[in-house]
Amino acid sequence: QVQLVESGGGLVQPGGSLRLSCVASGRTFTNYAMGWFRQAPGKEREFVATINRSGGVTSYADSVKGRFTISRDNAKSTVYLQMNSLNPEDTATYYCAARSYGGIHYQARGYDYWGQGTQVTVSS
Image (cartoon, rainbow, N blue to C red; front, side, top):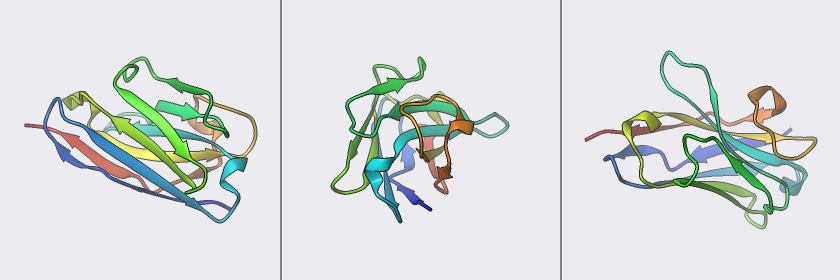
């Protein structure tokens, strides 16, 4: 069992930046590939970014490519999502997720553990 706790969300103006963090506990962090997903009101949960166990492989949704960066610090059991050039369409609850088997993955059903989410609101 892995527990995931996100933090770092908040209200930011268009063009601004936020860094989300997700701390994992309960099992060896390097056993898991990690992902970030988001869900806006009335919409399905969508993939944002994913990173493999070592941190050497990453992948992004087209909508965030070039603006968001996923990274991990295995010594701190933490995965990050640096979000730059935010726009109102990025407003959503952001979730981190852990995947027990395999590498990076783009679909929510491929992940075994989820955090409670952190709200990001981009508005002037």
